[in-house]
Length: 145
Image (cartoon, rainbow, N blue to C red; front, side, top):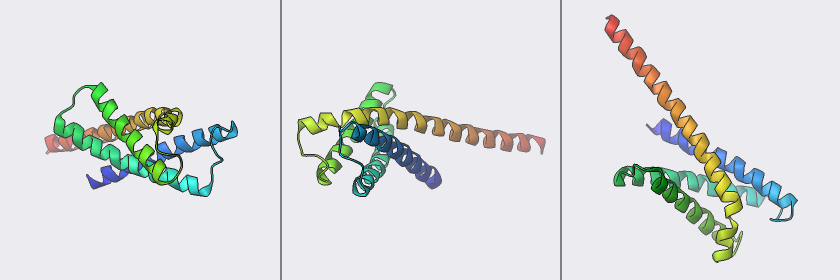
């Protein structure tokens, strides 16, 4: 169980960090953001790690409330992403507290959210298939004996 949690944190953090970094560099080439510095890269890594932890909290909330439809789950996860990125961005002085910066993070946050969700889903499907295969092989061994 702990291995799966660590793997999920790793996948979410790495995938979102890659996406944010690529978009940040792209937007900085068009002078839409400041150039990517070492300090900003570390701040982005902190945001991505915090977001991964936030997604684990979202999993617990979804299980506790028994959310079975996709829209409330997506809204909850996006809300957590926006809250973490916005408040850490303000904390790190990446942007001021206000409605415009909150909306301004959308061009990076939305594509990265969907990319990360897509990759995490596929990793989870692979893990489930691996578990099912192990169960199947154990059941086959049990039937032979």
